[in-house]
Image 1: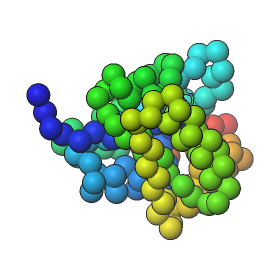
Image 2: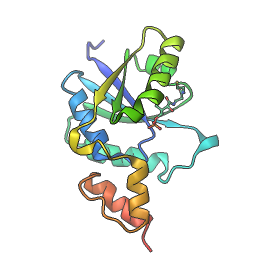
Image 3: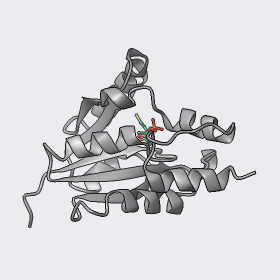
Length: 164
Ligand code: PNS
């Protein structure tokens, strides 16, 4: 039996960016552990990186944090996954106001499905608030430089994927 507080940070993480990393580190100021949980849906998967590649990149990024961050993947409803992990909290990041409507809808639906589970929103760090996995992929695919916006291991993987 452990009294550790565990927060679930769900997402696609295709790939993890420095915005995500900042959010995980700030979450660790409040919770003992964070599970970075990749939602998988084989029927609707247009991801650049496989789940295994994404898990490995996340593990590498947080390797120095003494097991306080765990990378995992799940299929199905997030609220059920959180229950299986004995977590009462979902963390989501908010960048601009444009994120709000989508996040609000998801939080309300999750609350309806599992009222005892809370969604906590954290503001993304100011230097990362314009970063998104989608934009990072687009910029690299067109030959642009995203160093500083993603961890170094992710940068290398992105460059390999789009090597011409
Ligand atoms: O990084 P993303 O793509 O914005 O993350 C969205 C995610 C993975 C949090 C959301 O799609 C999700 O929770 N998927 C799991 C399936 C589920 O529970 N869907 C109902 C959400 S209200």
